[in-house]
Length: 144
Image (tube, rainbow, N blue to C red; front, side):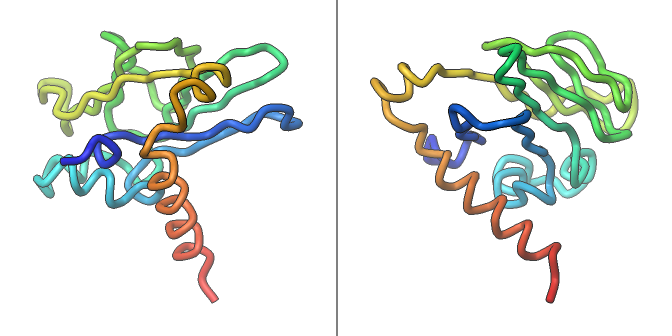
């Protein structure tokens, strides 16, 4: 599987007013989760809107908020539904099964890059895929 297909990447525009927010889940990135989680049973443990990331440029803080009743681990901690925590570069996020005894079945690593790093290395190949998937999901839910 190509590198771009194993990652979600979001471009945060510099100089934007207000916080930047991205929702992650099956509704927002359906192809991504279906590619990585072929088991329908496990896929059902990933909510349509599982968590959101928000970046406040004025404070430089990235936060993650669990939107789902389904399990979400940040590092080794299970977040409560609605709980919001600051997250940093390199932290691991994991989806768990339908009960507390079910193991984690999908782990993601959060990677944050500065504008200088993006300029030097180029955009992550998944940025275009993520933006296209999000736009398609938004169009599908907007209806006629």
